[in-house]
Length: 250
Image (cartoon, rainbow, N blue to C red; front, side, top):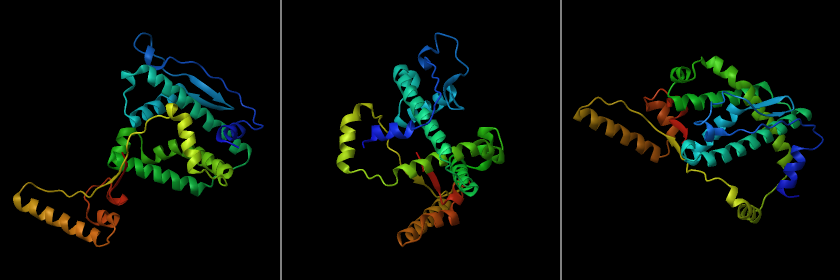
């Protein structure tokens, strides 16, 4: 069974899905007409997908592939359509997972949620800066994201139960790429960055001491010491120190 057939079977099955999709003009008409504050883009079972959700995810993807929506409104509209279809697929899979009584344990949610919060803190620089950026406390941020994390884990578990025994050959991957390469979006290069920060007061002796200290740390790492341990021990960046200097993917 090929992927399109399998996807269709998984997404439909015996599930009764109420789907209401509204057309939206997106950013293209934003300058020539009153801007839509928000609206319902789709309804899957009792789950609602808001237009603002579609825009948010589309803007994030646009950022990742390196283009500005206002410079290419037509391309952004196409991206919005792709994002909407992806969100619909996720909601259908979520509904199927709940129908099949897939369960996610509280400790699994807690672990995944904490990892997400840690990543957000690392990107923001500190818990205080993250709270200022989002306008809420860490505990409230966790409450806001908890249900989203639960749904994501639910979808992941359901997909694993269906795809665990599936293997894909290199030849099938290449054939898929040849068939769909015109519709596969470009993905910008990403690197995982970690750093060790030392505060240096301007002076020749301070510069020399800092350089020597960094060389000593570098030598320890080259001799087998863990970068993460060195960052936790020496780094002076409060945002990434406890994460072993990890800044995440950029």
